Amino acid sequence: MEHAIRTACQIVGQPEVIVVGSQSILGTFDEGQLPPNATMSLEVDILPIGSDNAEVVRLADLIEGVAGEFSPFEELHGFSIDGVDMETSTLPDGWRSRLVKVQNANTAAPSGDPQFTGWCLDKEDLCVAKLCAFREKDQNFVAALLEAELVAAGVIAERLPTVPERYIPATERALGWIRCWL
Image (tube, rainbow, N blue to C red; front, side, top):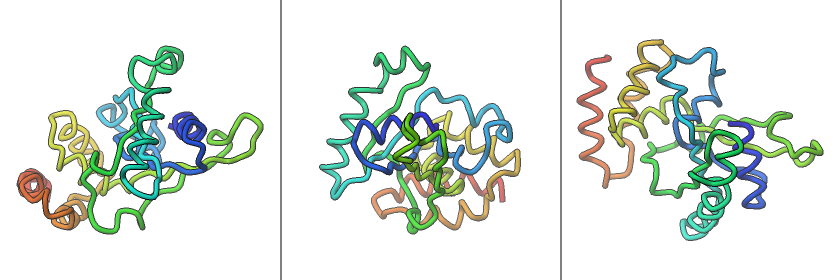
């Protein structure tokens, strides 16, 4: 993930990006603390920071073109970086205030300067996004975190109704699923 943060920042020429996919769980936990179903992804979803969604889409396309699926970057490093936009993840109110900062020697340029920053989704906000998507792999991801007692079902259930109104059907389905964990 740190390599993806550094690379994405260099591609878009900005000091910060947001990690929104399943790999954002690595902002909160080390890989060794996570169950296997929470670490299977070979892609890192990066949301560039832009003044509006059109700018974010432009920057996401840059990331995708350089380091996306089937790129020389993926061939060399064994994972891809998917540039995403504001419509990719369904996130609850207040998600930006709960982002987890990842900045260390591994997110720095080879010279050590600048030191790039990746902002990862809060663990329960990530679970909200996964449950709104509701693919089998997303359900398995959230279930693995719940079984390992790394996320709180109650917090997820509280945040689900705060996603944008257009996602109400997804929210209702997700609330039905999470209730068995309460």
